[in-house]
Structures are given as structure tokens and as C-alpha cells.
Image (cartoon, rainbow, N blue to C red; front, side, top):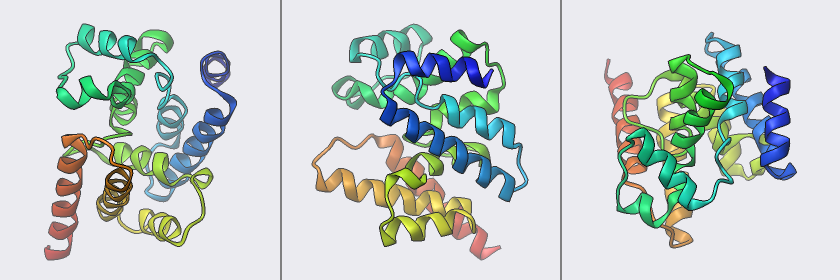
Length: 193
């Protein structure tokens, strides 16, 4: 299966993005192993998380609409934000993936989702924090945190992404904010109990 996915990626994704995808796969396996979760599920979700990354905006919107996904004004203005949800559709339709944990982790990797499970948290973190993203002190601190507390790491990774989006004057999807607030609440709840 991995060879088939890599062959598809080589046809549909630039080489630099494939390096990122392999980095996400690697980090997702490491995090899953650390948290005693299924490393094979993490590997598959990591390998397929960006299947639709280079689809044209119109195709992303069409596939999302055909699937009945909720589409808001931010999605319409920035259809590339739909690539995570659409990648899960491609994983299902192109590669026959039916495991809901894999599909959900793929769908959640960009914007997150309030209430997401540990595997989704892992792929979400790996997407932002894999080694190819750089080695700034802030990224290194987030990587360390991801091995200590998944919810706290998701919260702080959302903050990191939001700072970037604000500084570059990009649209911010409301789901990112809801994910951040959920993870922050979960992190505080863990401290209280």
C-alpha cells in the first residue's frame, strides 16, 4: 500500500512536498509509538494527509460539496483550507481506506477539530512540527511539548499558527480558533483533575 501511495504522490505532488509528507509520516510514527498508539495508523494518515494539497480551488470546492461537507465563507475565499477534508475523501476513494481513525486524522490535520482524538492530534502536530519545518527555538519547544502533553501541544501549536496567520494577514478559519480553545480547555482540565 505504501508503495502505491508514494507512486500516486510522485505523480500529483512536487518533490519538496513529498519530503514534508515523509517528515510528517516519520514524526507521526514516533509520536504514536511514544503514546502507545497504533504506529501503522499514524504512518498511513501521515503519508496521505496532503493527497489533495495541489488540487485546484474549484476541484476542492466541488469534491467538498459533493461529499456534503460544511462550507463557510472562509472556505469559499480560501479553498485550499479544504485540502485536509478532501484528502480524506481521496484516501477513501483512491486507496480504499475505510478506517475512521485514519480518515479523521487526515481530515483534521490542518484546522484541527474540537474533540479530536489522540491520532488526529498526532497528525495535526506532525504536520506543523516535522523536522523539515525548521529548527527555531519555538519549534523545538513545541516538538518537546508534543512528547509531554498532546492537548497542551495542540493549544500552543494553534497559537504558533495563529501568530503566523496574523503576521501574514491571512484569513483565519473559525475551526482553528475552536480547536485552540478546545485544546486549551482540555489542557486546563487535565491540570485541575
